Amino acid sequence: MDERIFQIAEQIAEIHQKAFEAYLPLVEDVCSRTVSEAELSHLLDYLLDFACDEKILVLYKKVCRKYLYVYPRCITE
Image 1: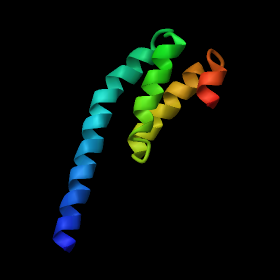
Image 2: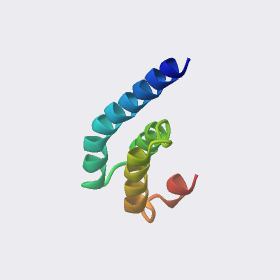
Image 3: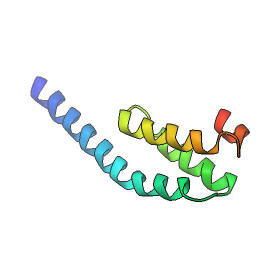
Image 4: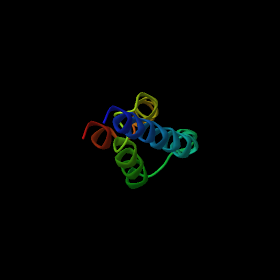
């Protein structure tokens, strides 16, 4: 039982790492230019799917800081 739980935890960590690798370039792109509110909203929704991971949460906060005053309603919701 303990071995199975450990394997599941490893798989979750791998998924989170793959998500970070996939979202990092998207976040860098979004933070390097001005995007529409719809595009920003979609990215934030996707990032929230993995917000339990600290590295993804850092990406989420980076996007929020960039767009807080541009789209305050989108960020605060």
